[in-house]
Length: 166
Image 1 (tube, rainbow, N blue to C red):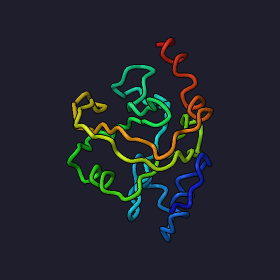
Image 2 (cartoon, rainbow, N blue to C red):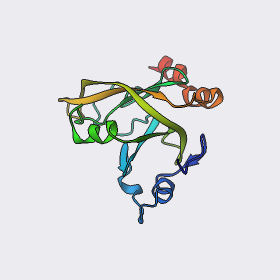
Image 3 (spheres, rainbow, N blue to C red):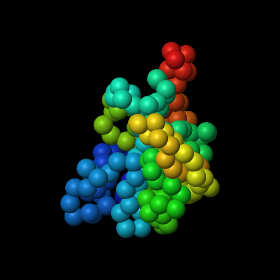
C-alpha cells in the first residue's frame, strides 16, 4: 500500500520520487505536503533556534511535536493554520497519513514512522515571531504500529539535558 519501509530514512526528494510526482517537489515539502490521497507530515523533533528575532522561550522547540508514548504523537500545525483552514482539511481528509521524523536540523533525512490516524484536533493560538497570536491546530494522532522503542529513545534523548540547561 505504501512504497516506504518502516524506520528507514528518506529525504523529501525521496518521498517526491517514490510517490511518482513526475517532478521533484522537495522544495515545497515543509511541515505538511498532500499528494493525491496521501498526506506527509515532516517533523524535526528538536528544533534549533537560530534566528534571534524569534519570540520563543530560549531552548524550547517552535512546536509541541512530541511522542507521548510509542503510539500517540502530538503535532502542531504551522502558525496561521486553524482547524477550518484548507491546510488542515488537507491533513484530515487524506486517505493515508504518513509521519516522517528527524531528531534535529543536523540530520538531513527523516525516519519513516509509519501511517497514523487522527484521534482529535483542537483549535489553539500561538504567538508568531512578532508576538501576535494566530490560530494553530493541535492534533493528537495514533500510530498504526507502535514506534520501535530504540528509535523513540533516540529521538527523545537530550530532552532532559536541554530542559536543565534553560
